[in-house]
Image (cartoon, rainbow, N blue to C red; front, side, top):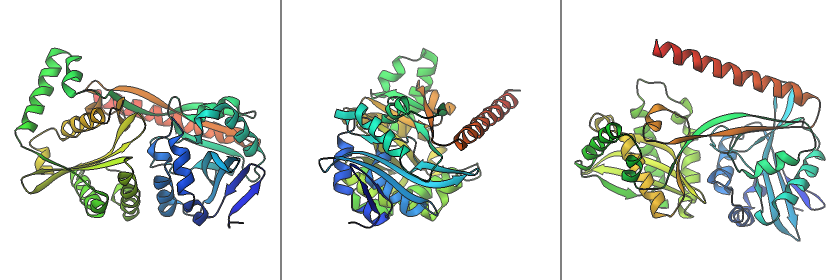
Length: 367
């Protein structure tokens, strides 16, 4: 028996990282059969995240098989928070969408079977998925969960249909569209050279992207994790494989020989998602760098015949001015013991406090 693989009937739990790493072929095959899967549930993303961010957590990847074929996978880890034993999804914090993989052909039945397997799994009180997008496979599991369950608001994500930017502008007011077109004209005058990074070029290109990202945010509040060596290591490892399999793209923008911007985009079954970009301050004083990256993202999504471009988490004004629409993620919590109620109450209180603080800061900025 493979170390860390605890078999019980048709369900099993992987607790050994090396066993999880060895699952790549069957995990990728299941991923392709899941209509709601995103790159954040890919084997490349999750194994890389676990290597650099697993820390003191204990791996608990629940698997369901039918006739030796993997048909469901719940990428989990066990942690402790507020006195509760918590099952959380791998990738939490860095993943804009958290979900499980359920073979599309048997989604409802697998959700019920997964519920039974989870309830029979000892050593946990509550399971918490903070970023389930609308239509996620997790919704099916949440709907049939026989125990206590809670549904709360998650992050807002902005989307645009994968149409040329000119078509997007046509739907905006004349004054707004005219202003944005003038910004795009300035970009065209730069004579940008656009280069798609190959898997072999990822290590150097990712280092350049993160350097530009740090320069872009110099003197302003930045996510400090984006400056860490482990973040760079995670993106480098995962991007190398994701680009090789067509699930991500890393793009460099140059003016002459000068690298002025870079953009890392994740590619799902129906969307391209702008995950991180960086721009030289020299470029930012001349053009709207977000408009440059946005136009490229739309072209990329349109060329791949995807339905939409996702701007992922965050409803910042510089995104919304292009006509992007907000769609809210949901936080889904599943209870197994009486401690789950206290955990859910604390989560709800924190969400309420964060919303109140945001409203006060917005009101202060307006006044």
